[in-house]
Length: 210
Image 1 (cartoon, rainbow, N blue to C red):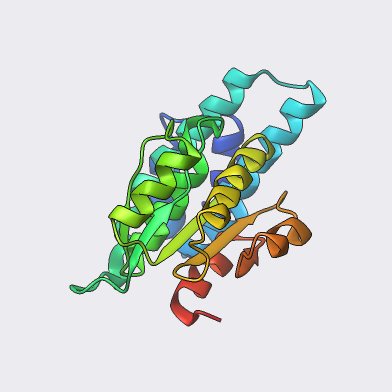
Image 2 (cartoon, helix red, strand yellow; image 1 turned 45 degrees about the vertical axis):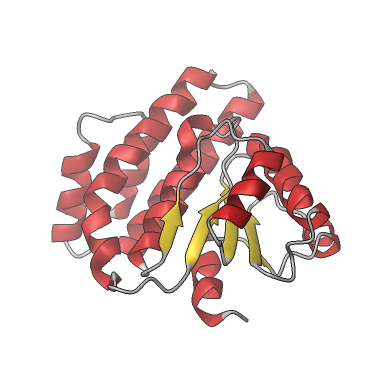
């Protein structure tokens, strides 16, 4: 029987050639999409970063794991898109940061957000905080979200959040940030409405608005 644990191992090992078959087998054997995502995929990337910080692996191995995760996500997308609706629930901009390896966090959050029925505006990874704020105004964004799996991306994501606050946009949009390394105190000072430790909590806030 194939479990979410096998998916975790494939990502940590950078087994991009077989991960799609492993994910499909795990689904066939009864594993849920949520378990594969939250117990296998995201923790595997966090573990790779921990090993990188300890000097146990090199950055290339983290990239291989990230690409393996993206390959596995391609299998999950049809399941995550099951709740798509014709009329978008809102326009969402995902904060992107050039230091976030292989756009891992952004791709996960984008897929889940679109699957819940939101229109996701995609911006290039090298967009500056100032240009991001301009685009938010232009596209009539109602929700801005960021979720960083990797510690290296957190500071840059916070710079974008600060630019949003300085532009006076906090009253017009929902600002949601998530990730293991997010500081609740700093977020509160910036007017962030939701600080989430996992991606599902981030998505739930989109819908509830609490």
